[in-house]
Image 1 (cartoon, rainbow, N blue to C red):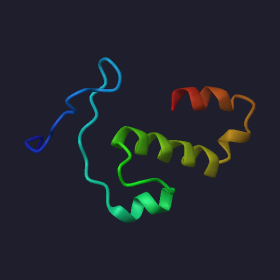
Image 2 (cartoon, rainbow, N blue to C red):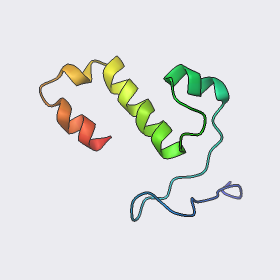
Image 3 (cartoon, rainbow, N blue to C red):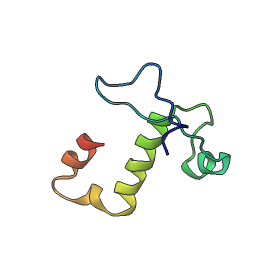
Length: 69
């Protein structure tokens, strides 16, 4: 199951290991980002978009959600 798992050579945060994944090119344009963005930054942008779409950014504790992202 994990035979294809390849950890990043230099994780962004100590103790955080993100798998290397292939993102379909259409998803870059859907998020309005460049294809050379890192998987970490792509995931972060995707999370921020989800917060906005769900209206969480309008909650009084929105800063807590953004800090988690």
